[in-house]
Length: 286
Image 1 (cartoon, rainbow, N blue to C red):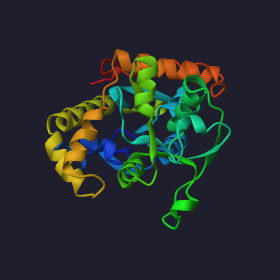
Image 2 (cartoon, rainbow, N blue to C red):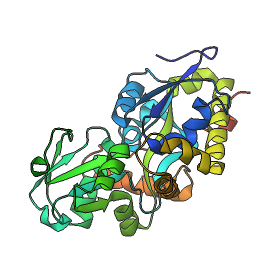
Image 3 (cartoon, rainbow, N blue to C red):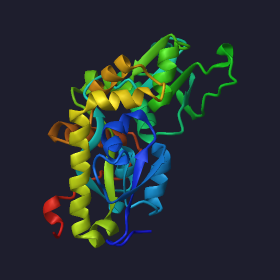
């Protein structure tokens, strides 16, 4: 369901703290924009983009890898890290090397993080474990917790802070220590049909998103103050958290993304290698 150029574009937003530096200036009215913003989990946004119910969105990088024929990548936008990410964590009641042949419960909210965990366990740690989709619930007692749980986003931040799991593996840090490259958890993409029909509106959309990223980067203190109101992390913790995140898609990020896609193909998660097709503002008709 692609919008015409005279209608507001449907833009997907992950409902986590990690995208606030880009979406806060849009949603607060600091930067005028042509979007109707739709919030959801990464998995939900993947589905909405796949079904054509969004024009453009941040999506799990694996969504692009599996369906590159549907999308163009928007330039210089990602959710990535060059080391510790803090919000993609394998939380465990035992050391990682004790998880051999155990069952690990994994979030249903992110496909990319699950795929990354599978690769790290097999290639970096030499561990074979069963990954089973599931969720933590408020009714679980400490003794009933899964032996290990892959958490993402605000849930990972909360669980890490409350300390119910004594062992924690930061997937961003593990990837960077292993490869020396950033890890790209999510990309902003646009439907190919939308890119072809929007013409000048696409240039405007790209300019607005670039301006939002720039504003968020230059006003992190304000972003942290607003984010602190959600009660997930303190102001000081948020300042540390946002310094871990990057929002660019430069050469290093693209190298990291390419390596991730190559490993996915080697592990049998992809039948073909997806080329990175980034739409250029120069391709947009003014």
